[in-house]
Image (spheres, rainbow, N blue to C red):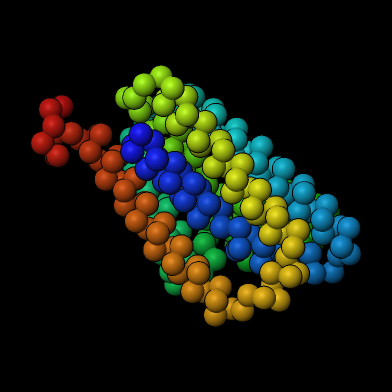
Length: 223
């Protein structure tokens, strides 16, 4: 039961931190500044729906996609850990991660007919970091050597964490005007740095588990 609780906390914290609803909300405000309220709500709804579909797709079928390209989960876990580490470092130094959104994408997104898909849904809400976390966590859930009931619960946790993170993002974008008025840049940077430190710790854990699984001899195991 303790292992399941730890996995639940890891799943919800890692996916929520990588999705970063607050950062998505701030970008949403900057992209929809000239729109009326009805258009803003439509963009928020469409962006959240597309982001959720993509994240759930990789959550459910990510392992098969890796097998199709001949990529081991250990390699993906280590690569994903390095990616998350970089995102975390950007957050600690209060920068928008390059894996989230570039200045060019933001500029192009403002001129596009539909900004809900690009750049909001991808890569701002569901970016490489969120996809990596979902695939790795789902693999962890399927590999838990527990009772069948606990395996089912663990597998259900990852999609639930994805739905929760996107749901929070949708709620915050719906209430973006109120949130932006209440949160100053100083408070945002402080919260972003704290989440970045947590994400770095999660990334290091991903890398350590990947190395331990791929090279058991390094940790005293038998290959």
